[in-house]
Image 1 (spheres, rainbow, N blue to C red):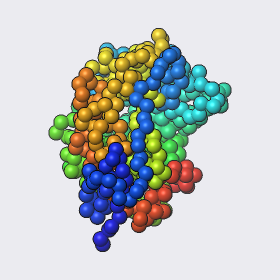
Image 2 (image 1 turned 90 degrees about the vertical axis):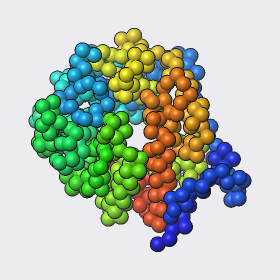
Image 3 (image 1 turned 180 degrees about the vertical axis):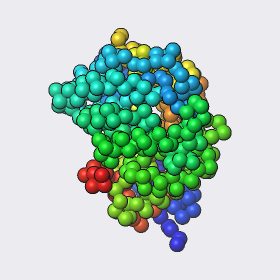
Image 4 (image 1 turned 180 degrees about the horizontal axis):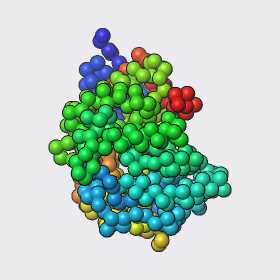
Length: 438
């Protein structure tokens, strides 16, 4: 079947046309034959900070790095060494509670917060969970807020007592799991080389006794030469309803090449559409997020909607020693000392150069003229924070444009051929629908 669907928009005087059937991007077409209104970007790159409390009030996402250690030795781990006990080890309860000041100082009109319990492996520090979770739910009740609590874990240390605790405090659990055993155990192994799949499945069985299916998510990391469609099929069959795909781009020989990366996500979209066509409620990220942002720009003509993680602005990560970073990746980075934004004991540094906006994509020569700028913030901000005028993301010139082109293709195709499926992807999934599959 020959498709004639296109995404057609104007950006900085260039008419951008994307041919769906050929997956071909045409740019620098002078003039705007369609007479469409130009979608200009009106982003504010720097925030004038008069008082650091102004920025603290923005922090809606807080990562608590409960442990700098891990009991596994995954091949692609973003921590160079998992035995980082000397770096702070386990977060004391006092530090974890101090890190909740943005929530504690919020007003009832401040809306929704997300607190992510992270690591390392956070269950190495499970003894502080009862007091931490009780404090979060007490704050939620006292301040009339909505606090989503997420625990990211490899599940190998899950026990009945911890599972019951997570269920009692309505914690969402994101499981690190790469698919069936033969794929999972390639990279997610114990220090002695044993695979962790069997232990993960035991932990999953325990967890499901107390935590409903719609609050158990899974994050597979996609490496070179793995069948993405088969992995998704397996995870769906295993009972997961929200899947967050991660691509390995920082682990040398395991890195997934750009072409294989896009092919894998293409097969993921095929699976996604297949499930939704059959009224099977599921969320596959980041595909839903990218399609939603394209819709914001093309479908609603939004002028300030683009993909931004919010590191340092809306998001912070607190390390076991109390140091504040823009996100967990900065804490794990080689030059992490350069990007400390304060400490929970002394306060947040709202004047740190990272917050000036100097590394915004519009100011980077390899990004500011890119056709994808209306949607993209340049990728990982950890890679962007460097002294030179460099491309924001190491993989931006390879993976990032290909990803946006793929999503433009699917957006135009679904818009024209299956609008009901596009609607189901773009609109927030009804949690009640997911609960019917518990």
